[in-house]
Image (cartoon, rainbow over all chains, first blue to last red; front, top):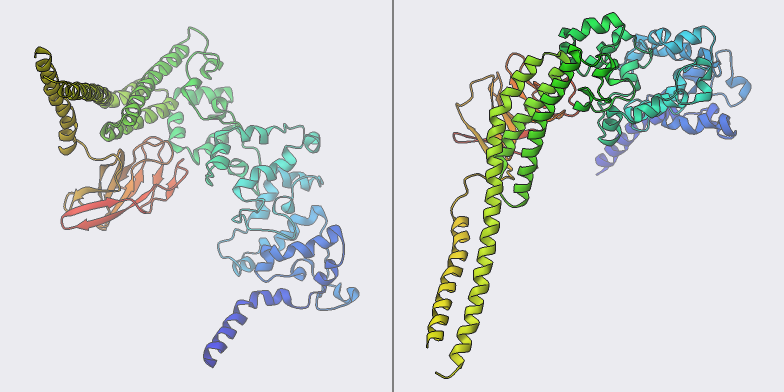
Amino acid sequence: MTKKIFSIAVFSALSLLPLAAFAQKNSCLDCHSGLEAELKAPAMSFAQDIHQQFGLTCKDCHGGNPAQASEDKAKDKTFKGAPKRTQIPEFCASCHSDAAYMRTFNPRLRVDQFSQYETSKHGQLLKKGDAKVAVCTDCHGVHGIQTAKFPKSATFPWNIPQTCGRCHADADYMKPYGISTDQLTKYKDSVHAHALFEKKDMSAPTCNSCHGNHGAFPPEVKSIGSVCRQCHPSTGELFAKSPHKKAFDDMGQSECEACHGNHKIERPTTAMLGTTDKAVCVQCHDKGSKGYQAAGELKTLLDGFDARIQKEGATLVLAEKKGVEVSEPAYRLQEVNTVLVSAKNLVHGLALDEIRKKLAEGEQTLADVGKASAAALDEAKFRRKGLIIATFFLALFGLALFLKIRSMRKPA
Amino acid sequence: MERRRFINFFFGGSFLATLAAFLYPVIRYVLPPKQAEAVQKKVAAAKMGDLAPNTAKIFKFGSVPAILVNTQEGQLLAFSAVCTHLTCTVNYEAATGTLFCPCHNGRFDMAGNVISGPPPRPIETYIVEVVGEDIFVSKKA
C-alpha cells in the first residue's frame, strides 16, 4: 500500500514537471498580472501558448531575470523587451531558423520560415520600411500562439481565410497598395470554400495553399497551372497536350484561371461549355469559327449523355421508392457515371474523338441500365395493378358474403 | 331460386378470385427474389485462389462497387471502390500497389489514405474475413 502511494506521488510529480518551470518565480508574470489592458494581456494568454507548453518562459524571448523581484534587477543587461514591429521576423527567427535548437523541441519542424518570409511580398515591403505589412504575430498571435493543428489557432485551415482577410478584406487598410479587397468574399462563394466550411474538408485549399504561407506571393501567370496541378494533376496533363496550351501561352493567359477564375472558383459544369453567353469558350472563339463549333459539339455530347444518366437514375430512384429491388442497375449506373466524369475531364485535352470514344465505352451499359430501370418501373406498375385487383376482389367477396348471409336469413 | 343460385355462384367466384389475389403475392414472397437485398453489410466477395498476389477484383456491395485487393505480400484488403472526389470507380494499380481513380488521377494507399490528386477524404476500408474457401467482406460497425 505504501509502495502504491509512493508510486502515485512520483508519477504525479513527474506529470507536473513541465508546469514546474512556469510555476517557478516569475516576476514578469507577477507584475504584468497586476497591470491593465495590453500590458496585462501577455500574462493572461501565455498559459495557453505553445512555447509555454514546451517549457519556455518570458526570458527566453525577452531576456531579463524573472527570478528577481524588483523591476530594476529583473530588467538586467540581458533584457530585450518587446521588439519593434519591423524587428519581429528576425526576433522570432533567432530561434525558429536555428535547426539545432528547434530540433530539441520537434525534429520535423521547418526552419526556413524566415528565409521564405524574406522572399514574400510582405517581407519585401517590410525591408523597404513598410511596417503595415504582415509579420509573424499578425497571423500567429503574440503570447497565445498555438500550433496550426489546433482548431482555434488563426493558422488552422478553417481560420486562414479570415486571418488573411483581416487585412486583405479591409479596403481602408489596403488602400495604399492598390489591390482589390474582394478576395475573401469571392473565396467564400467558391467550391473550395464550400468544401472547407460546409463539408469540413481539411484538405480543401485556402489562401496559403495557392499563395504560400511564409513566402506568400501572388502566383505568376505561368505558375498558376503548377499551383492547381498540386491537386488536379490529370487536368494539367491533359491541358498541356491540348491546342489551348500554345494559344494560352501566346496570349499570356494562365492555364486554369482564364476559364475557372481565381478566388471564386465555382463547381465546374457543362454550362461553362458551348456557345451560350455563360460559356467560357465564347470569350475567345467567334461565332462560325472551328472552335465555336467544337464548343457546341462538346456540350451537346456531354449534356446528352448526362441527361440519359439522370433520367435512368431518376427512374431507378422512383422504382426503389415503389419497393422494387434495383441494386444491380444502380451498381451499373455507377460505372456509367465514371465514364461521364472521365469524359468531362477529357475536355481539358480538347480531343473530341477521345471524348466520343470514352462515352462510347458507357453506351452499352447505359442501354442495359435503361432496360433494367424500365423493367423495374413495369414491375412497380404490375404490383400496383395487382393490389388494385386484389382489393377489388376483396370488396366483391365482402359484398357476396353480405348478400349470401341476407339470403340465408330469408325463408325459402 | 335463380337469384339464390346467382348469389351462390357470385359468392364462390369472388371467394376464389380473392383467394388467388391473396395467394399470388404470398407465392411471389416465398419464392427467392432474383437479386439480393439492396442494403448489405456483408458479402461473399471471392473465393480463395481467385486472386493472384498483386491483383484485385471489383465486386458489388449493395448497389455500389467495392474492391478486394490481394497485395504483393499476400494480404487481403477491401475498400469501397467509390472515389471520394467525384464518385468514380477506383482500380488497383499493380505497378504502384495503390488504388487509382482514372477520372482525375486520385490515388490512395493501402490504408485508404489519400496519397495524391483531388480526393478530399480517405476511401472507406472494409473488414475481410476468410471462412473456409470463401472471402467475406463486411462494413465496419
